[in-house]
Amino acid sequence: MIISNLSHETLVARVDKLVSDILNPESGISFQQISEQLTLYYQPMTQLYNDDLEYVDSIKWFIGSCYLVCGSYYPDEVIWDEAMTFNFLQALKLYQNEFGTAISEFAFQEQRNSQSLKNYMNHFLNKYARILIVRVDLKIRSNYAHLVDIETFQDYMSQLLEQIQKDREKTKKQNTLSRNDKGCFEDLRGYAWAIEQGVINGGLHCHLLLIYNGDKRQADWFIGERVAEYWLQITGNLGWYHNCNTQDIKEFHRRQGTLGVGMIRRNSELDVRNALNTALYLTRPDKYEQRLKAWPPNMRSFGRGTMPRA
Image (cartoon, rainbow, N blue to C red; front, side, top):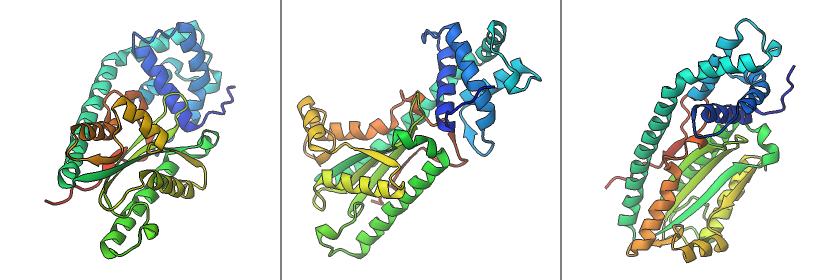
């Protein structure tokens, strides 16, 4: 009997990676590695599979191929010897064409998201002489990741997005607040977010992009830290973050000519190009392996604010 200490999120990430490695002829995974990973992942996958979640096709292919090969055996009776592993491979490779289609469909959807986000960004770049861009990557501490499943992460995100809306409403009603009294989302003009999942350990994280009127807000590092503090509050200190607006990070990108956060000037072609590149990182079509592997019905992994009326 296999006793697994893998969380559901780690398990689905590793099963997805195994399926991708098998169906990608350039991966170089060996027969022995496949057999060992089947031994590690098959039984836990049958135990942790959640009927209340939606799964990517790779997980469905894995389970379907296993059931086809294992027949009436109970999961704890299965031994992934050479014959069983070979039969599994034969079954899984029937999905070779679907695998290529899944990658193409993901890239197509991300290209659509990219165009939507680019149009959204251009609206603010055209409207304001200066915009302040803050990017914060929100995650879960690795030693607590097993405590946070996708449903819990979705709840954290809902609380975050609700606070964004509350602060924006407050901005409309109170225009005389001193700078020290302002919430981290006040004077926010636009925002976008993308939820992703790590390839190996399945860590859930969110890339959050915030767009402010540069005449209303400065101190981008400080805003990023305030956002991070709120994330830690939401998660009960299970969360962690990466503030992309620190002085060291900005100085590195400034030297590289790739600085796309902080104060962005509309009349600087370089600023505008870098700001767009920073935003479009959220929707890169080549991040197939970082997509969510399981999620509650109707959950979105990408979103942005509503396009303001002209």
